[in-house]
Length: 146
Image (cartoon, rainbow, N blue to C red; front, side, top):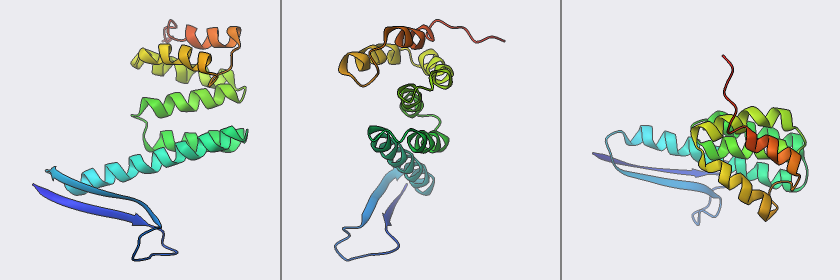
């Protein structure tokens, strides 16, 4: 097995102190370390976009937040927390109809998100609007039409 190291820094300024380091990764004990590094870089990029989306949403820049989250989901569609995050941003932006199919998919694949949604309403992370939230929670019961 091989080990690989990857350090991602700003192309504009690189210093010996590496204060401009975006992230660095080290993969050990992997039969395919380069493949694993590529996967980790892809995930890091996706989560950085999701964090940026959260910042934009907190400023109510909904279109930019949604765009950033969509890019994150495109990079890492296997991460249900990113798809759930996109659905919650859509809901917060008042784009309920767009959010419902995403909630449905996440709830179907990972039912724990139903309980998390209830808790997010209590914590104030989702709107405390019973009819809207009930429509979201009902997605756990909806069967896809074929």
